[in-house]
Amino acid sequence: EAGVTQFPSHSVIEKGQTVTLRCDPISGHDNLYWYRRVMGKEIKFLLHFVKESKQDESGMPNNRFLAERTGGTYSTLKVQPAELEDSGVYFCASSQDWGRVGYEQYFGPGTRLTVT
Amino acid sequence: AQSVTQLGSHVSVSEGALVLLRCNYSSSVPPYLFWYVQYPNQGLQLLLKYTTGATLVKGINGFEAEFKKSETSFHLTKPSAHMSDAAEYLCAVTNSGGSNYKLTFGKGTLLTVNP
Image (cartoon, rainbow over all chains, first blue to last red; front, side):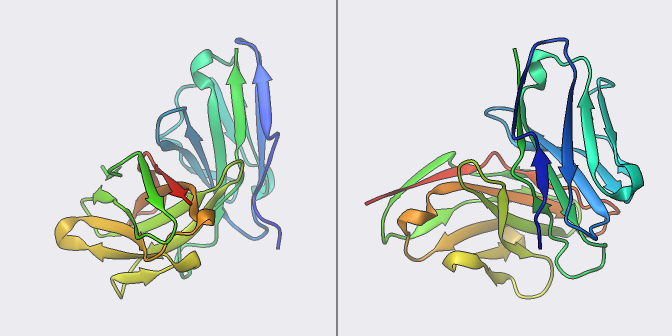
């Protein structure tokens, strides 16, 4: 079974440009999460999808960030325009339906975003 | 609000020595607790989890952790460190009764194993 995949693995862009990160969850996982880790800080929650619906986007930093999950499969996270403080590693995670044993979230390898 | 404190951003042990990584949490409801490990250039891998039931939980690679409600702790241990254990370890908590199992992480502990 394929794990959570993320693309690209690295992205270097200039301030003011746009970047789109992609996450492909494990097949059949309805829950999809985005997290971010800024250097030297803890991993922080950004938002949560259940299928194609946003369940909780309380962690999104501001309206320069837009997440979508068309058809309840893969998800994209767009940053427009990017600022220096957006640099960090963006993780995606997925999990099965609530109520199943474990509540485990499976993480992707992350996308390292550098804004210069 | 929930929070996680990991004491010691960097822990160094000798190969064969006991590994003890500390995690304390704060939660207003019964927590679910997790330890993840991240090797360089890889994603987070779940080591073990506590949801309900037995408070001593065993995970992969010989690790175990004990949930102590009275101490609000979930420390990770391994009797004998191996060189391959060198990695970053992250403790996380989520609500047991919420509608969104988003994880709150600690800042992580980098484990170094010396030969």
